[in-house]
Length: 117
Image 1 (cartoon, rainbow, N blue to C red):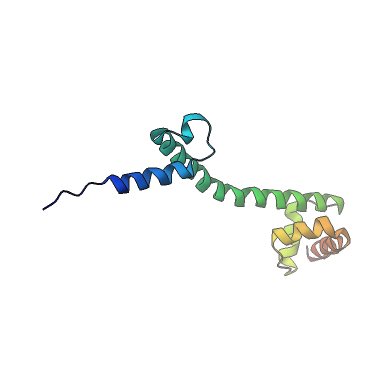
Image 2 (tube, one colour; image 1 turned 45 degrees about the vertical axis):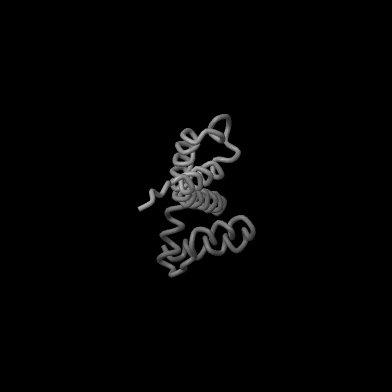
């Protein structure tokens, strides 16, 4: 039986890694071994970043809601507690958008939250 060489698959795999490493600084974009390390590490950073993005946006929304609450004379935790007791179910993303773009509506929400407490 004839021996099958693995050159084509190795070449294909190396080409794929070097394509992913395109634009990296120095040897990381040219040399296979360092490119492979850089691509693996960048994949880890991307995976972690997808999780961190969710945390970061939640923190941003909470900060914006808190700033809106301060203008209405209450703090974030009492505002959220009041909304829960008033059976107003708006997520933090929408509350932050309301706080930025429609302060009057946010003030009304704050009044409803105060009344429910």
